[in-house]
Length: 286
Image (cartoon, rainbow, N blue to C red; front, side):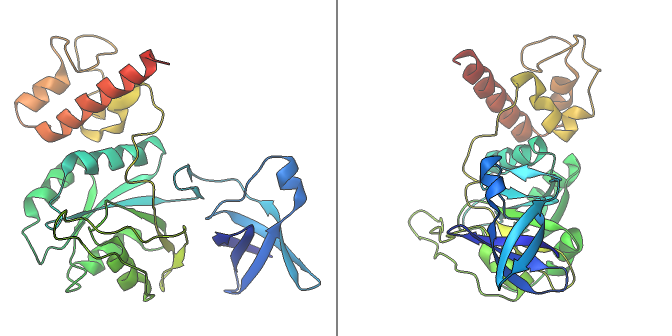
């Protein structure tokens, strides 16, 4: 029978089957010989013999994240808070870049709209071209808009501690997820997620938290390819004076001109510049 791995603990894989059953499985020994490790999110074929379940086939993966290890993600929902903690656009941008690098649709969700006006932040990312939802996990405002963006998809929620990912996931799934209290001193939540697990949505699709995705540097990518991960820069490809323009110090650069006249946000360009220099220096020291 076919199904999807929604949780893995201690070498056991829990598979939600197409008929809504759940089977605890081990992976067949051939996967170890072939150095293939089943991942959360894998679409699999399983068999049950003598009351024991086994993963016997893993279907081709549409996408894959390394940190955390999860497969077949359709969208990454980058969650920020309108306040407490205050939004950090550089961090938001880095997570969006990670989604772009992995070929996964990036979405933006601004939570805690009951605490502060999120219009300006939402407009920043809407102008870039990202689908954006403004919500309040406290009041439920905007939740339908967010659900409309992820319905029928497997959506990973990413964001720094304290922005309300677990509270949103609890609302979406109707299942209680552990949350960490936000420290008044540092305005960041205590990370409580212990393992990656898919949670089914009532109207189709899955959601999951992504511990590890939010705090890492963007994954391996050549500095010269970084502009492809910024939609507003991608749209200006071929308009610079020099082919292969890095958009840093070259004259007649369409990207820098767009920053000067306000078509590209300065905060987004500053994130690009910092990431470009970081990726270039990392390559040089290898």
